[in-house]
Image 1 (cartoon, rainbow, N blue to C red):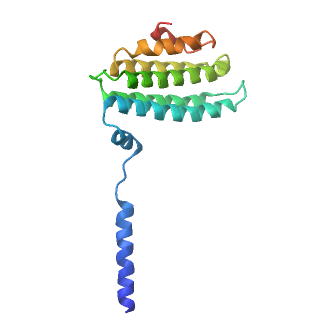
Image 2: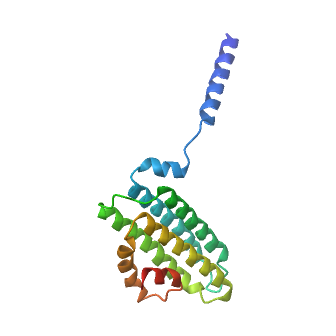
Image 3: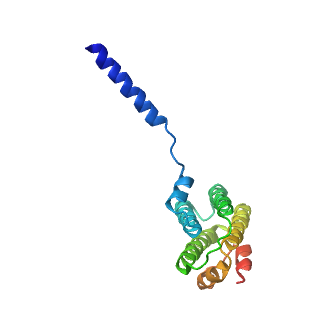
Length: 182
């Protein structure tokens, strides 16, 4: 009787190891599985990017105005570059009829840009942080260019959303602003 119980336990253990070792989809695959339409994928990418950047902005907000922000900004640049890579894999969107999703993508990008500008402005005047701000500016410009390649004409939607804030905040991200034509 005990040999049957032991063999049953070993069989259950073997099946549990098999179930534990089965492959699980990564976050990027899960994002693609959630939405197969290109605009949905882009919107999910930007929503995830905004959530991750907001975490880093919260860490920046806790720092002193004279602090070195290069490590945190470097992490933000890595997130932005990963989003650019994901946008390249999406490719150009042919069907631009869904204006609601295009506006949502533009709004999320504008929120990312505005939040970063408001937070970075405090630190941009310090000499130690100039390189970090320039790297962030270049990464954001790359993201904006790739977004414009994927969704042609989205700059026209983003620019008015950002114009409202440029009058209030002194913007250190000059490359992005010149690309938007502001």
